[in-house]
Amino acid sequence: MNIVIRVDASTRMGLGHLTRCRTLAESLRVHGAVVHFICRQHPGNQIQTLQNERYSVSALPTAPEQIATDGDYAAWLGVSQDQDVDETRAALQATANDGKNAQVDWLIVDHYGLDERWERQLRPMARRILVIDDLADRPHDCDLLLDQNYGAGMDSRYHDKLPQKTVCLIGPKYALLRPEYRQWREKRQRKTDQVRRVLVFFGGTDSDNLTGMTLTVLTSPAFKGIAVDVVIGANNPHRDTLAAQALASPNITLHSPRPHLADLMAEADLAIGAGGTTTWERCCLGLPSLVVSIAENQRPACEALVQYGVIEWVGHHDQVTAANLADALIALINDPARVRSLASASRALVDGNGTQRVIDQLMANTRAA
Image (cartoon, rainbow, N blue to C red):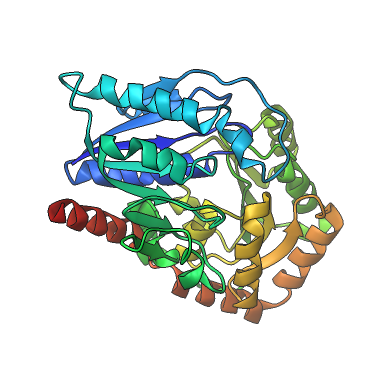
């Protein structure tokens, strides 16, 4: 298969969209597909990372920085959809061997700033289109739609936003996880309900420095004796401050960006971090979690996961303080039965086979074309 993925990463939107697309791309490559990325050169774009992983990348021109509030997804794109169509079309044509026949087997798009207007104009360039979304706030023109989120009414949230022919892959059953999570899921052994090792990770950027606040909590006398692994995201602007915090505390081990967190999750008794893509990774390993939502689109999933006993949600990032994070942590440490319940519920939700299920659908629809 010849695959093109249109996705962006930046200091504003984070790395979650790119992370799940990289996971899908790697699995597609294992199955013999040729994968090409199209990404805009936003600050923190991670294009070099893709190239280091031996992907070919078309880098769209840098867009002027726009002031945007949380949830202003059009500003994430940086340009109009029409301009993005023109630039993406040119990139597709440039990747064609003869410069004329640029039609690909699959065009995969993962971007909150794009909708059916963009997809419809690029239809002639692709035999099939896969949209990855989790907002359900706009119409799409696609053959497959993937929403790996969790919550009430998931099966009907796209009913008026898609062509009748579209096949929907809905829920954490289709969570795009690297194979390491499935492998470490089998190795992970919980021998105790005591919280002795904590993993801290707040995503690729963490502009509010929730990591630093969490380390301040974990180095207080109440948590003496707890070992802490901290992963700093690739676009985290607080690296030096966090390094100083870790240096001052012998129980903290600092980790640079990694291809995956599966091994660290397997060693941890508890995770503290953001909602989003990492939620499904923690669930796969049955790792109990204290979660802070860092974007508006993470709230609904957090609310649903709390309702079904999968996570402990501390709150939204602008309302969480060191004091209420400490209270939530103490309450969980002192309730082994709750720790056990969170581990069981989260493990039951995600089995680690979602990426393969998506690949199976892509291949089946390619053969049917």
